[in-house]
Length: 364
Length: 197
Image (cartoon, rainbow over all chains, first blue to last red; front, top):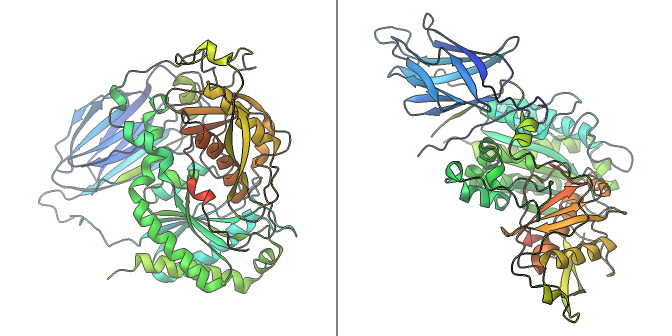
């Protein structure tokens, strides 16, 4: 059973008028290299997802598109041809030589480059299914940034700075474990929550770890807690998803529900719902990672154990890998803020999180 | 295993998409003065019956712990869930009377409108002051959100999820929690052990 998810990046930025006209897309193919390359050149910026299914790849776009040419066939063992499916999707029919796909985006004009790796019969350039095993990627997400300072401690320590500091320390420690570490931000800047998750998905990360410092009006509040996503928030959508596309749209009762009535599952875009459900498949692994992190933090810091908890954190929702959010401590607590000004303590916290990561990623 | 390859080709047109998908996600300005239509089940005579009262349980953030504490209040026993819900939220916004409880919402927050759909989804629209719940820390944010959600779902059987709006608009998040959809209650918040900090 293949579940199809479509992922969208940076949806807080878009403000363009929703166009009824489909977006023109020029399709070109190139089989002259070791891989078969498909380039989609878009007339406007459009968010698309490449979804891998047996025998085909789907390029699913957020809005209607009009491909030119609409379809084509190739004499190529990696890619047999392409054609439309509905008004938002281009299907690439892969051949027996196809092994895997890489994508990248280019600007001016907006292009999606899809490289289909594989083997052409009789050629010695066969690409193995897992070529030279790249290092697994772990994405660390330093919470907040830029004008979004996050919480601020009693003597002025800012959450955004501390999360970045911790992420950089954690990166150094983790990279000793033969993993590649990507930070969602490595500078002091605003980054929308969904973009953070999208970076993890785009890098095909095996783990997503969002780092935060907590704050409370209760100045005595102290200690670390580790969260994974509470999926109860999306239960209704998960249940109704199967029949969603066929369900007739029921206009809201404008008498009972004035114009502000927000989205119900049936009037949210399908792609958005799929994004929101993405993490649901990884809850068990996320829970294990959260338990490991919390246990290591308790051991390392000896500060109060606030436990593993669940909440509908937006930044965890779209992640297609085990994903957790660590509230490393309460920056609002004077003693805890003071500890987080200490390099040795920050290193200890980073070491603890890294040890937990190692325990869940350990290979036999 | 299906692989999902992200293609952050460009900016998503979500604002536009939202506008497209119904055109009814932006603010009513101002909210209509007329009360929401009574559900078919509500009989007019019910509202004119003598005023009976019933006890409800409100939830406020604990002054000591990362939990919600319960406080019993009385409301007028009206038929329409909107009316009961509005009374509950009014009491919640008034603040706690119990020692050991903190206000659930920033000072000055008022309820602009509450309506309940027959799907069990309620939408509570608060004044701009509720934006002050974005204090930077998730702990207080979680308690504010679930003080509202739990207080409504606990006492009104017609409500099983609560959507939170600010000044007539959807607010995607106060910084951490996803508020783009109505939330079910978090029953664990009132059940945490009361260990000393």
